[in-house]
Image 1 (cartoon, rainbow, N blue to C red):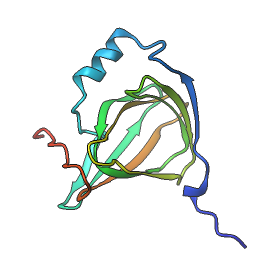
Image 2 (cartoon, rainbow, N blue to C red):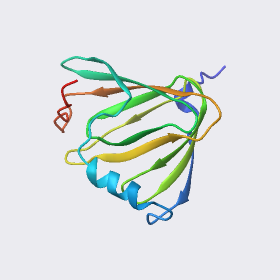
Image 3 (cartoon, helix red, strand yellow):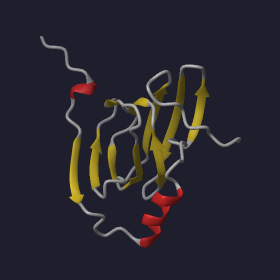
Image 4 (cartoon, one colour):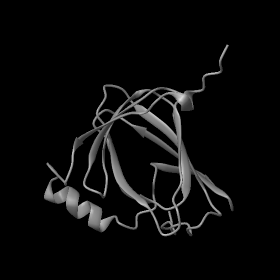
Length: 145
């Protein structure tokens, strides 16, 4: 019997637009205004010298604003669902998640990932996201709560 982990499930991600197609002026402005926003989840559960743990629970139609990833990180989907993501390269993706699915992302030196995320499903979409410090990029300073 082969072992099958949730991280083996292929991420169902479809590019639905490129070249900033169908982006509102407000969305483009948010990418400019939030270019250094390191608040990558709805709530920071814990921060230590080596990691940050974030929780996000998006109701249907709710979105997390544009934010910048500079640290290596991984997310775990606590629920299944669907989301739309706009990225700073001008692409728009629609993504399907399975409960328990996880993905790991590396941010090489000087690189980043700037995007938003909107729940386009019918149920709450929940994630835990863990950023790991000690990589090639310094953590973004978070505003005082």
